[in-house]
Length: 422
Ligand SMILES: Nc1ncnc2c1ncn2[C@@H]1O[C@H](COP(=O)(O)OP(=O)(O)OP(=O)(O)O)[C@@H](O)[C@H]1O
Ligand SMILES: [Mg+2]
Image 1: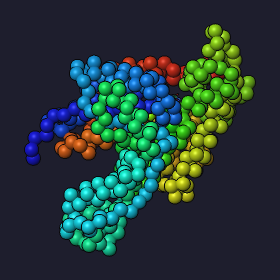
Image 2 (image 1 turned 135 degrees about the vertical axis):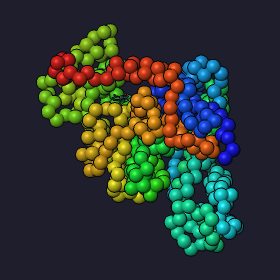
Image 3 (image 1 turned 30 degrees about the vertical axis):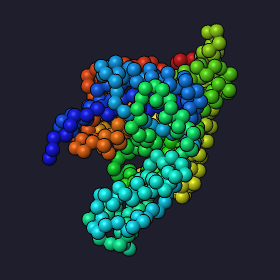
Image 4 (image 1 turned 120 degrees about the vertical axis):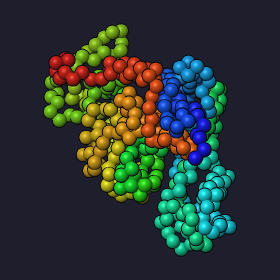
Protein backbone atom coordinates (compact mmCIF):
# COMPACT_ATOMS: atom_id res chain seq x y z
CA UNK A 1 0.00 0.00 0.00
CA UNK A 2 1.26 3.50 -0.82
CA UNK A 3 2.49 5.42 2.25
CA UNK A 4 -0.13 7.78 3.70
CA UNK A 5 0.85 11.43 3.53
CA UNK A 6 0.96 13.22 6.89
CA UNK A 7 -1.88 15.73 6.96
CA UNK A 8 -3.64 18.17 9.28
CA UNK A 9 -7.40 18.34 9.75
CA UNK A 10 -9.37 20.99 11.64
CA UNK A 11 -12.87 20.88 13.11
CA UNK A 12 -14.80 23.81 14.52
CA UNK A 13 -17.88 23.30 16.66
CA UNK A 14 -19.66 26.67 16.57
CA UNK A 15 -22.01 26.20 19.51
CA UNK A 16 -24.39 28.59 21.21
CA UNK A 17 -22.24 28.74 24.34
CA UNK A 18 -18.74 27.90 23.10
CA UNK A 19 -16.70 27.72 19.91
CA UNK A 20 -14.36 24.73 20.09
CA UNK A 21 -11.55 24.22 17.57
CA UNK A 22 -9.73 20.91 17.31
CA UNK A 23 -6.80 20.20 15.01
CA UNK A 24 -5.57 16.66 14.40
CA UNK A 25 -2.54 15.34 12.60
CA UNK A 26 -2.86 12.07 10.73
CA UNK A 27 0.64 10.65 10.71
CA UNK A 28 2.38 8.64 8.04
CA UNK A 29 1.25 5.46 9.82
CA UNK A 30 -2.37 6.65 9.73
CA UNK A 31 -2.48 7.35 13.49
CA UNK A 32 -4.63 10.32 14.51
CA UNK A 33 -3.33 12.75 17.15
CA UNK A 34 -5.08 15.92 18.33
CA UNK A 35 -2.27 18.48 18.30
CA UNK A 36 -4.06 21.77 19.00
CA UNK A 37 -7.26 22.97 20.61
CA UNK A 38 -8.89 26.34 21.09
CA UNK A 39 -11.97 27.42 22.92
CA UNK A 40 -13.78 30.71 23.30
CA UNK A 41 -17.18 31.56 24.70
CA UNK A 42 -19.67 32.01 21.90
CA UNK A 43 -21.43 35.33 21.40
CA UNK A 44 -23.95 36.12 18.72
CA UNK A 45 -25.67 32.72 18.31
CA UNK A 46 -29.27 32.12 19.24
CA UNK A 47 -30.86 28.68 19.00
CA UNK A 48 -28.32 27.62 16.41
CA UNK A 49 -28.85 30.72 14.24
CA UNK A 50 -26.44 33.58 13.71
CA UNK A 51 -28.04 36.52 15.56
CA UNK A 52 -25.04 38.88 15.63
CA UNK A 53 -22.55 38.12 12.86
CA UNK A 54 -19.83 40.47 14.13
CA UNK A 55 -19.91 39.06 17.67
CA UNK A 56 -19.83 35.48 16.38
CA UNK A 57 -16.94 36.31 14.03
CA UNK A 58 -14.95 37.55 17.04
CA UNK A 59 -15.72 34.34 18.97
CA UNK A 60 -14.66 32.11 16.08
CA UNK A 61 -11.52 34.18 15.56
CA UNK A 62 -10.61 33.89 19.25
CA UNK A 63 -11.13 30.10 19.33
CA UNK A 64 -9.12 29.61 16.13
CA UNK A 65 -6.36 31.93 17.35
CA UNK A 66 -5.87 29.83 20.52
CA UNK A 67 -5.56 26.70 18.39
CA UNK A 68 -3.16 28.44 16.00
CA UNK A 69 -0.97 29.64 18.86
CA UNK A 70 -0.65 26.04 19.99
CA UNK A 71 -0.07 24.82 16.46
CA UNK A 72 2.46 27.52 15.60
CA UNK A 73 0.87 28.24 12.21
CA UNK A 74 -2.58 28.78 10.63
CA UNK A 75 -5.11 25.95 10.82
CA UNK A 76 -6.05 24.14 7.61
CA UNK A 77 -9.55 24.36 6.09
CA UNK A 78 -12.08 23.11 8.63
CA UNK A 79 -15.08 20.83 9.01
CA UNK A 80 -17.70 23.04 10.65
CA UNK A 81 -20.69 21.89 12.69
CA UNK A 82 -24.07 23.35 11.79
CA UNK A 83 -27.45 23.22 13.55
CA UNK A 84 -30.68 25.20 13.73
CA UNK A 85 -34.39 24.86 13.19
CA UNK A 86 -33.85 25.88 9.53
CA UNK A 87 -32.48 22.41 8.74
CA UNK A 88 -34.87 19.93 7.16
CA UNK A 89 -34.39 16.22 6.67
CA UNK A 90 -36.21 13.83 4.39
CA UNK A 91 -35.92 10.19 3.41
CA UNK A 92 -36.02 9.90 -0.37
CA UNK A 93 -35.59 7.28 -3.07
CA UNK A 94 -33.13 8.31 -5.78
CA UNK A 95 -32.50 6.42 -8.99
CA UNK A 96 -29.66 6.55 -11.40
CA UNK A 97 -31.00 8.11 -14.57
CA UNK A 98 -29.08 5.81 -16.94
CA UNK A 99 -29.24 2.72 -14.73
CA UNK A 100 -25.47 2.62 -14.12
CA UNK A 101 -22.84 0.08 -15.13
CA UNK A 102 -22.70 -3.68 -14.56
CA UNK A 103 -21.43 -4.67 -12.04
CA UNK A 104 -21.99 -1.64 -9.77
CA UNK A 105 -18.76 0.30 -9.19
CA UNK A 106 -17.71 2.93 -6.64
CA UNK A 107 -17.99 5.49 -9.40
CA UNK A 108 -21.69 4.54 -9.92
CA UNK A 109 -22.43 5.01 -6.22
CA UNK A 110 -20.65 8.40 -6.20
CA UNK A 111 -22.57 9.45 -9.29
CA UNK A 112 -25.89 8.43 -7.74
CA UNK A 113 -25.15 10.60 -4.69
CA UNK A 114 -23.91 13.50 -6.84
CA UNK A 115 -27.10 13.31 -8.96
CA UNK A 116 -29.24 13.37 -5.80
CA UNK A 117 -27.32 16.38 -4.45
CA UNK A 118 -27.77 18.13 -7.80
CA UNK A 119 -31.49 17.37 -7.92
CA UNK A 120 -32.15 18.67 -4.41
CA UNK A 121 -29.49 21.35 -4.53
CA UNK A 122 -31.24 23.07 -7.41
CA UNK A 123 -33.88 24.17 -4.92
CA UNK A 124 -31.92 24.55 -1.62
CA UNK A 125 -28.45 23.94 -0.20
CA UNK A 126 -27.95 20.24 0.47
CA UNK A 127 -25.71 19.37 3.41
CA UNK A 128 -25.89 15.57 3.31
CA UNK A 129 -27.11 12.73 1.19
CA UNK A 130 -26.61 9.62 3.31
CA UNK A 131 -27.48 6.35 1.55
CA UNK A 132 -29.33 4.03 3.92
CA UNK A 133 -30.04 1.08 1.63
CA UNK A 134 -29.58 0.35 -2.07
CA UNK A 135 -31.66 -1.41 -4.64
CA UNK A 136 -29.88 -3.26 -7.44
CA UNK A 137 -32.23 -4.57 -10.11
CA UNK A 138 -35.16 -6.08 -8.24
CA UNK A 139 -33.17 -6.74 -5.05
CA UNK A 140 -33.99 -4.34 -2.22
CA UNK A 141 -32.33 -3.58 1.13
CA UNK A 142 -28.80 -4.05 -0.17
CA UNK A 143 -26.22 -2.51 2.17
CA UNK A 144 -23.24 -2.74 -0.13
CA UNK A 145 -24.09 -2.71 -3.84
CA UNK A 146 -20.47 -2.85 -5.12
CA UNK A 147 -19.85 -5.67 -7.55
CA UNK A 148 -23.54 -6.62 -7.88
CA UNK A 149 -25.28 -7.05 -11.23
CA UNK A 150 -28.81 -5.94 -11.98
CA UNK A 151 -30.60 -3.43 -14.15
CA UNK A 152 -30.93 -0.06 -12.38
CA UNK A 153 -29.24 1.26 -9.23
CA UNK A 154 -31.32 3.16 -6.66
CA UNK A 155 -30.88 4.22 -3.06
CA UNK A 156 -33.07 5.13 -0.15
CA UNK A 157 -31.18 8.07 1.28
CA UNK A 158 -31.45 10.50 4.17
CA UNK A 159 -31.20 14.01 2.72
CA UNK A 160 -30.51 17.03 4.93
CA UNK A 161 -30.90 20.52 3.52
CA UNK A 162 -31.48 23.99 4.88
CA UNK A 163 -32.68 27.48 4.09
CA UNK A 164 -29.98 29.28 2.05
CA UNK A 165 -29.76 32.49 4.13
CA UNK A 166 -28.64 31.06 7.53
CA UNK A 167 -26.08 28.81 5.81
CA UNK A 168 -24.74 31.73 3.73
CA UNK A 169 -24.51 33.85 6.90
CA UNK A 170 -22.54 31.19 8.80
CA UNK A 171 -20.29 30.83 5.74
CA UNK A 172 -19.67 34.59 5.78
CA UNK A 173 -18.88 34.52 9.53
CA UNK A 174 -16.33 31.78 8.95
CA UNK A 175 -14.78 33.65 6.00
CA UNK A 176 -14.60 36.91 8.00
CA UNK A 177 -12.93 34.98 10.83
CA UNK A 178 -10.32 33.77 8.32
CA UNK A 179 -11.56 30.16 8.24
CA UNK A 180 -11.84 28.21 5.01
CA UNK A 181 -14.80 25.83 5.32
CA UNK A 182 -14.04 22.34 4.05
CA UNK A 183 -17.58 21.19 4.69
CA UNK A 184 -20.58 21.78 6.92
CA UNK A 185 -21.67 18.75 8.92
CA UNK A 186 -24.89 18.66 10.95
CA UNK A 187 -23.90 18.55 14.59
CA UNK A 188 -25.95 15.53 15.65
CA UNK A 189 -24.32 13.46 12.91
CA UNK A 190 -20.90 14.43 14.25
CA UNK A 191 -21.91 13.78 17.85
CA UNK A 192 -23.38 10.39 16.92
CA UNK A 193 -20.11 9.53 15.17
CA UNK A 194 -18.28 10.13 18.44
CA UNK A 195 -20.78 8.68 20.91
CA UNK A 196 -22.94 5.82 19.56
CA UNK A 197 -21.67 2.27 19.59
CA UNK A 198 -21.93 0.07 16.50
CA UNK A 199 -24.58 -2.03 18.31
CA UNK A 200 -26.68 1.03 19.12
CA UNK A 201 -26.65 2.12 15.48
CA UNK A 202 -27.56 -1.35 14.33
CA UNK A 203 -30.31 -2.12 16.87
CA UNK A 204 -31.61 1.46 16.78
CA UNK A 205 -30.99 4.42 19.04
CA UNK A 206 -31.77 8.13 19.36
CA UNK A 207 -28.86 10.46 19.92
CA UNK A 208 -29.91 13.75 21.55
CA UNK A 209 -27.16 16.39 21.76
CA UNK A 210 -28.47 18.89 24.32
CA UNK A 211 -26.28 21.97 24.09
CA UNK A 212 -26.94 25.54 25.10
CA UNK A 213 -29.30 26.65 22.32
CA UNK A 214 -30.58 23.52 20.58
CA UNK A 215 -31.20 19.84 21.20
CA UNK A 216 -30.16 17.98 18.07
CA UNK A 217 -31.62 14.56 17.32
CA UNK A 218 -30.23 11.74 15.19
CA UNK A 219 -32.12 8.46 14.93
CA UNK A 220 -30.13 5.42 13.83
CA UNK A 221 -31.55 2.14 12.61
CA UNK A 222 -29.92 -0.80 10.81
CA UNK A 223 -26.56 0.90 11.01
CA UNK A 224 -27.49 4.20 9.35
CA UNK A 225 -29.09 7.57 9.99
CA UNK A 226 -32.85 7.21 9.61
CA UNK A 227 -34.07 10.59 10.87
CA UNK A 228 -32.66 13.87 12.11
CA UNK A 229 -34.30 16.91 13.71
CA UNK A 230 -33.52 20.03 15.72
CA UNK A 231 -35.44 21.20 18.80
CA UNK A 232 -34.85 24.85 19.76
CA UNK A 233 -34.90 24.04 23.49
CA UNK A 234 -31.74 23.29 25.47
CA UNK A 235 -29.58 24.49 28.40
CA UNK A 236 -30.41 28.18 27.94
CA UNK A 237 -34.12 27.50 28.43
CA UNK A 238 -33.43 25.63 31.69
CA UNK A 239 -31.45 28.67 32.84
CA UNK A 240 -34.12 31.14 31.69
CA UNK A 241 -36.74 29.25 33.72
CA UNK A 242 -34.64 29.91 36.82
CA UNK A 243 -34.26 33.60 35.84
CA UNK A 244 -38.03 33.99 35.63
CA UNK A 245 -38.97 31.58 38.42
CA UNK A 246 -36.44 32.85 40.96
CA UNK A 247 -36.15 36.49 39.89
CA UNK A 248 -32.35 36.42 39.51
CA UNK A 249 -29.98 37.48 36.73
CA UNK A 250 -29.08 35.07 33.87
CA UNK A 251 -25.51 34.70 35.18
CA UNK A 252 -26.77 33.90 38.69
CA UNK A 253 -29.34 31.47 37.26
CA UNK A 254 -26.64 29.66 35.21
CA UNK A 255 -24.46 29.34 38.32
CA UNK A 256 -27.44 28.11 40.37
CA UNK A 257 -28.26 25.49 37.73
CA UNK A 258 -24.69 24.21 37.54
CA UNK A 259 -24.00 24.37 41.25
CA UNK A 260 -27.27 23.26 42.85
CA UNK A 261 -29.65 22.21 40.08
CA UNK A 262 -31.23 18.81 39.58
CA UNK A 263 -34.40 17.56 37.88
CA UNK A 264 -35.04 15.30 40.85
CA UNK A 265 -37.76 16.50 43.24
CA UNK A 266 -38.30 13.17 45.02
CA UNK A 267 -37.19 13.30 48.61
CA UNK A 268 -36.31 17.01 48.38
CA UNK A 269 -38.14 18.78 51.19
CA UNK A 270 -39.71 22.15 50.49
CA UNK A 271 -37.98 23.33 53.65
CA UNK A 272 -34.49 22.64 52.27
CA UNK A 273 -32.94 25.78 50.89
CA UNK A 274 -29.71 27.11 49.41
CA UNK A 275 -28.35 30.62 49.51
CA UNK A 276 -28.52 31.84 45.95
CA UNK A 277 -26.50 34.76 44.67
CA UNK A 278 -29.15 36.90 42.93
CA UNK A 279 -26.48 38.58 40.80
CA UNK A 280 -27.72 41.95 42.05
CA UNK A 281 -25.13 43.91 44.04
CA UNK A 282 -23.84 40.81 45.79
CA UNK A 283 -27.26 40.16 47.33
CA UNK A 284 -27.93 36.54 48.30
CA UNK A 285 -31.16 34.99 49.51
CA UNK A 286 -32.39 31.53 50.44
CA UNK A 287 -34.31 29.65 47.75
CA UNK A 288 -36.18 26.38 48.16
CA UNK A 289 -34.28 23.46 46.58
CA UNK A 290 -37.61 21.91 45.67
CA UNK A 291 -38.52 25.07 43.77
CA UNK A 292 -35.23 25.06 41.80
CA UNK A 293 -35.57 21.38 40.98
CA UNK A 294 -39.26 21.62 40.09
CA UNK A 295 -38.53 24.36 37.54
CA UNK A 296 -35.76 22.24 35.97
CA UNK A 297 -37.88 19.08 36.08
CA UNK A 298 -40.83 20.73 34.31
CA UNK A 299 -38.50 21.85 31.50
CA UNK A 300 -36.97 18.34 31.32
CA UNK A 301 -40.45 16.81 30.94
CA UNK A 302 -41.28 19.28 28.17
CA UNK A 303 -38.01 18.48 26.39
CA UNK A 304 -38.77 14.74 26.63
CA UNK A 305 -42.18 15.35 25.05
CA UNK A 306 -40.57 17.32 22.24
CA UNK A 307 -38.10 14.49 21.60
CA UNK A 308 -40.98 12.00 21.38
CA UNK A 309 -42.90 14.39 19.12
CA UNK A 310 -39.93 14.73 16.76
CA UNK A 311 -39.60 10.94 16.72
CA UNK A 312 -43.26 10.54 15.75
CA UNK A 313 -42.79 13.17 13.02
CA UNK A 314 -40.03 10.96 11.64
CA UNK A 315 -42.30 7.91 11.66
CA UNK A 316 -41.10 6.41 14.94
CA UNK A 317 -44.04 5.65 17.23
CA UNK A 318 -41.66 4.06 19.70
CA UNK A 319 -38.12 4.79 20.82
CA UNK A 320 -35.83 2.28 19.07
CA UNK A 321 -34.68 -0.62 21.26
CA UNK A 322 -31.29 0.74 22.34
CA UNK A 323 -33.02 3.79 23.73
CA UNK A 324 -31.89 7.39 24.03
CA UNK A 325 -28.26 8.49 24.30
CA UNK A 326 -27.84 12.00 25.70
CA UNK A 327 -24.78 14.10 25.02
CA UNK A 328 -23.81 17.81 24.85
CA UNK A 329 -23.09 19.94 27.91
CA UNK A 330 -26.67 19.83 29.22
CA UNK A 331 -26.62 16.02 29.34
CA UNK A 332 -24.72 16.61 32.59
CA UNK A 333 -27.77 18.15 34.25
CA UNK A 334 -28.50 15.99 37.24
CA UNK A 335 -31.62 13.87 37.04
CA UNK A 336 -32.28 14.67 33.36
CA UNK A 337 -31.57 11.13 32.15
CA UNK A 338 -33.92 9.78 34.86
CA UNK A 339 -36.77 12.10 33.78
CA UNK A 340 -36.33 10.96 30.15
CA UNK A 341 -36.29 7.32 31.25
CA UNK A 342 -39.49 7.83 33.21
CA UNK A 343 -41.42 9.74 30.53
CA UNK A 344 -40.10 8.07 27.37
CA UNK A 345 -40.23 4.56 28.92
CA UNK A 346 -36.91 3.46 27.47
CA UNK A 347 -33.23 3.02 28.23
CA UNK A 348 -31.39 6.32 28.57
CA UNK A 349 -27.65 6.77 28.97
CA UNK A 350 -25.34 9.77 28.99
CA UNK A 351 -22.76 9.43 26.22
CA UNK A 352 -19.31 10.96 25.95
CA UNK A 353 -16.87 10.54 23.04
CA UNK A 354 -16.31 6.83 22.93
CA UNK A 355 -13.67 4.93 24.76
CA UNK A 356 -13.37 3.07 21.45
CA UNK A 357 -11.60 6.13 20.07
CA UNK A 358 -8.88 5.48 22.62
CA UNK A 359 -9.41 9.01 23.86
CA UNK A 360 -7.91 10.18 27.12
CA UNK A 361 -10.33 11.17 29.90
CA UNK A 362 -9.80 14.86 29.09
CA UNK A 363 -11.62 14.55 25.75
CA UNK A 364 -14.31 12.20 27.02
CA UNK A 365 -16.61 15.06 27.86
CA UNK A 366 -20.12 15.33 26.47
CA UNK A 367 -19.51 18.98 25.45
CA UNK A 368 -16.69 17.77 23.14
CA UNK A 369 -18.80 15.11 21.38
CA UNK A 370 -19.50 17.33 18.37
CA UNK A 371 -15.87 18.47 17.99
CA UNK A 372 -14.45 14.95 18.22
CA UNK A 373 -17.17 13.66 15.87
CA UNK A 374 -16.47 16.39 13.30
CA UNK A 375 -12.84 15.35 13.23
CA UNK A 376 -13.63 11.64 13.07
CA UNK A 377 -16.25 12.13 10.34
CA UNK A 378 -13.99 14.32 8.23
CA UNK A 379 -10.88 12.20 8.59
CA UNK A 380 -12.65 8.91 7.92
CA UNK A 381 -14.12 10.25 4.70
CA UNK A 382 -11.17 12.23 3.40
CA UNK A 383 -8.05 10.37 4.47
CA UNK A 384 -7.52 6.93 2.99
CA UNK A 385 -5.50 4.85 5.42
CA UNK A 386 -6.26 6.78 8.63
CA UNK A 387 -6.38 4.38 11.56
CA UNK A 388 -9.81 5.53 12.78
CA UNK A 389 -11.28 5.35 15.27
CA UNK A 390 -8.21 5.55 17.52
CA UNK A 391 -7.44 9.16 18.45
CA UNK A 392 -4.74 10.30 20.87
CA UNK A 393 -3.84 13.78 22.10
CA UNK A 394 -0.45 15.50 22.39
CA UNK A 395 0.83 16.44 25.85
CA UNK A 396 0.22 20.24 25.46
CA UNK A 397 -3.37 19.53 24.34
CA UNK A 398 -3.87 17.17 27.25
CA UNK A 399 -2.75 19.76 29.79
CA UNK A 400 -4.91 22.47 28.15
CA UNK A 401 -7.98 20.21 28.32
CA UNK A 402 -7.27 19.38 31.96
CA UNK A 403 -7.20 23.14 32.67
CA UNK A 404 -10.60 23.65 31.00
CA UNK A 405 -12.10 20.78 32.89
CA UNK A 406 -10.75 22.07 36.20
CA UNK A 407 -12.48 25.41 35.61
CA UNK A 408 -15.71 23.63 34.72
CA UNK A 409 -15.57 21.38 37.77
CA UNK A 410 -15.34 24.55 39.81
CA UNK A 411 -19.02 24.91 39.06
CA UNK A 412 -19.93 21.30 39.53
CA UNK A 413 -22.34 20.82 42.34
CA UNK A 414 -20.77 20.05 45.67
CA UNK A 415 -21.12 16.48 46.80
CA UNK A 416 -22.27 17.83 50.16
CA UNK A 417 -25.97 17.65 50.78
CA UNK A 418 -27.98 20.69 49.84
CA UNK A 419 -29.07 21.28 53.41
CA UNK A 420 -25.40 21.37 54.45
CA UNK A 421 -24.86 24.09 51.88
CA UNK A 422 -27.81 26.15 53.07
N1 LIG B 1 -23.00 20.11 34.90
C1 LIG B 1 -23.93 20.72 34.17
N2 LIG B 1 -25.22 20.75 34.58
C2 LIG B 1 -26.17 21.35 33.85
N3 LIG B 1 -25.96 21.97 32.68
C3 LIG B 1 -24.70 21.99 32.22
C4 LIG B 1 -23.62 21.37 32.93
N4 LIG B 1 -22.48 21.57 32.24
C5 LIG B 1 -22.83 22.28 31.13
N5 LIG B 1 -24.15 22.53 31.13
C6 LIG B 1 -24.93 23.30 30.14
O1 LIG B 1 -24.52 22.89 28.86
C7 LIG B 1 -24.75 23.94 27.92
C8 LIG B 1 -23.55 24.03 27.00
O2 LIG B 1 -23.39 22.80 26.36
P1 LIG B 1 -22.56 22.66 25.01
O3 LIG B 1 -21.17 23.10 25.23
O4 LIG B 1 -22.79 21.28 24.50
O5 LIG B 1 -23.35 23.74 24.12
P2 LIG B 1 -23.03 24.33 22.70
O6 LIG B 1 -22.46 23.27 21.85
O7 LIG B 1 -22.26 25.58 22.86
O8 LIG B 1 -24.50 24.74 22.22
P3 LIG B 1 -25.40 24.23 21.00
O9 LIG B 1 -24.95 22.88 20.62
O10 LIG B 1 -26.81 24.25 21.50
O11 LIG B 1 -25.23 25.26 19.93
C9 LIG B 1 -24.98 25.22 28.74
O12 LIG B 1 -26.35 25.59 28.66
C10 LIG B 1 -24.62 24.79 30.16
O13 LIG B 1 -25.44 25.44 31.12
MG1 LIG C 1 -23.22 21.86 20.56
